[in-house]
Image 1 (tube, rainbow, N blue to C red):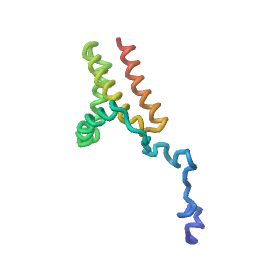
Image 2: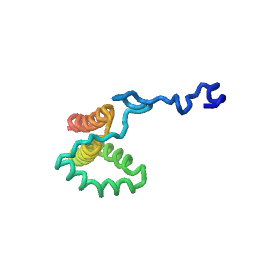
Image 3: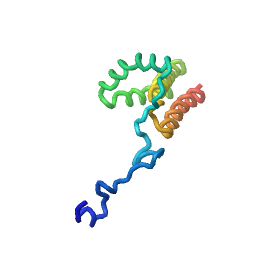
Image 4: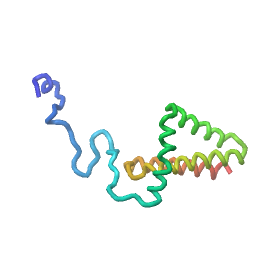
Length: 129
């Protein structure tokens, strides 16, 4: 640590904050840690089937998936009931699929947010019909 760094009060290499054992690192709770347990046969099969679809989704332009979701939500709110049901089912299945795939690697806050999104789709479906 040189004089300039010490004078400004910035942490040098030896004084950087690290997480205590069992706590999330500073600045974020998602460590990307995936449990060491073997996945269930259902999870392994779904991951294998999903891999090509996820690769295809990542190759699309970044705004494509969020815009498609917004369009489907607009259809679910504004369209006649039979069309709205289809839009809500597509949104719900997509969210459940991504939630299932990401579940082991997501922090508790992320899990809560994903469950909340699925619950919002269900509430929209109940109140819409």
